Image (cartoon, rainbow, N blue to C red; front, top):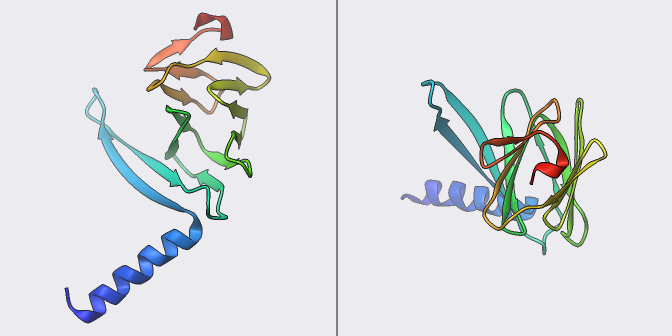
Length: 138
């Protein structure tokens, strides 16, 4: 890399560090041949940026207490001590404390380590691609 490229790369990395997170965008091919885009955020507790958002058809995913949560369009944030996630979408209001999820006042039990939990815009919850019909299905 030449001097200009090195300076640009260093400036971008510094910007990510100052923002308190790094974002990774992933394009995943689905069984029907279509592609979906997801964004994965990595937060650092020693930096001030704790909020996140997703737009359009993108979902944002983050790992929290060894469980991966994917949220639909909306805005969310981590608490100051990084022990809780709050998320607000058009039709949903979510809260994650530890490995326990609450969606629109419905409390779901504890998830196992390495579970993938996806919350849709209409409030449905999928764990490892299997829909939970009610909070007691776990």
